[in-house]
Amino acid sequence: MKKMIPKIILPVFLFLILPGTGMANKTSVSINAPKEVDKGTEVLITINVKHMGNTAGHFTDWIYLKVNDKEVKRWEYTKNERPEAGNFTLEYKFVVNEKSKIEIKGNCNKHGSAGAEEMIIELK
Image (cartoon, rainbow, N blue to C red; front, side, top):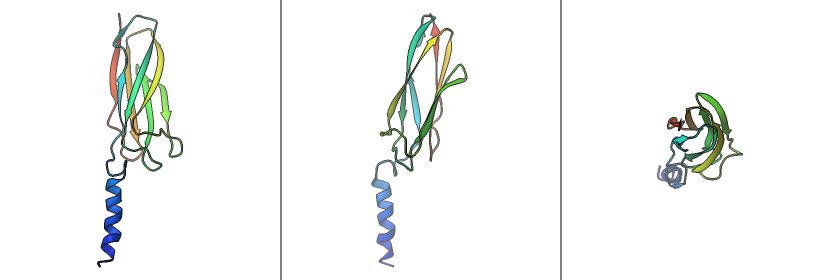
């Protein structure tokens, strides 16, 4: 019995101290974009993605961007092709010709999503 305890405790201990494993979380996103622009203005949307741990077994596997309920961009990742860091930034440009609802959502392959973030870009 005494020999089994280290075999059980060591993997649990390593799981808790290694980055991205013991502190696992859902992928969350936030949006940075202007709240109001002139019609015809090209805007830059910055997406901040937060996720503890991007390893081959635990990573953000997708992020989508919708404008007025239509998906305009999707970033997809695999265990072999993923961002190096758990927290990273994405950018997307588009021309605003009408009031625009922006929706962004990201997903962790193991824990899912913290939910979508939305904002409205108004016309001046």
